[in-house]
Amino acid sequence: MNESTPALGKVIKIDEARIQDHLGTIVRSTVEETLNGLLDAEADRVCGAGRYERSEQRRDTLAGHYERTLHTRAGEVRLRVPKLRKLPLETAIIERYRRREASVEESLIEMYLAGVSVRRVEDITEALWGTRVSAGAVSRLNQKVYARIEAWRNEAITGSYPYVYLDGIVLKRTWAGEVRNVSVLVAIGVDADGYRKVLGVAEGAKEDKAGWSGFLAHLKARGLGAPQVFISDACGGLVESLGEHYPDSRWQRCVVHFYRNVFSVVPSGKVREVAAMLKAIHAAEDIEAAQAKVFVLSISPTVRPSSSP
Image (cartoon, rainbow, N blue to C red; front, side):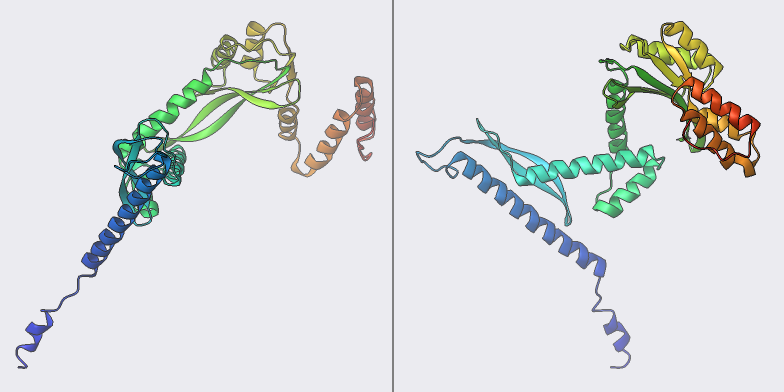
């Protein structure tokens, strides 16, 4: 008996992974059966009568089914969605599917745009939703969002924008596994009611005359009229391009960029004092008051600046 005991220990062996998989299959099939039953019941309610039932209250008849997958906590299930001949069938189940599908798409797009690799996206989706999204699915979603972006970038510019801000932003982008700096040119318009709107974005362009000239030509071709004032930094290529494409518009140097240029040559211990002086000058009601403030501060640098002229 003692010699046979070790052999008997191998007779009863519990495979937990197989049991979990079997239980998961049972749960998914139950959920799938329940949801399909609810869909059929919803179709009967909309039709006003059950399948093959003769009734004066009948408003429509069934015209078959089509399949659609739904991601649930129990896993992916297949729905047999009824099709009606005349009336639309809108159910809470389908609406939930659409919301879930949209949220998954948005999450995938955000992950990709944030620089997450396709392989990592596959792992994350499997961990979050229990379903592994293939590289092909990620690629198709990217093509969809790129098409939307291009449509937005080329849509006609309507309305009047008295003020337009121009600036270049440097962003980091993952390209072939390498992080690179990419310049993005941006135009933000302010309408007559004071509301701001992004009018245009050009990725990959350099902040030189050629880049700004091409961007301004793009804005003009889409319908941007001559604003009263363009506001930007003192980039020589930008200012020169404005004179070529919008000669009737005035240009104003951006105050924020001006402050940054000034602070770059000011000792760190004096930045706060100089900032207070600049703000006091810009808070003046007119140019005469601003010049008077400059004179006072220049001859009495120790005078505490105030916002009043």
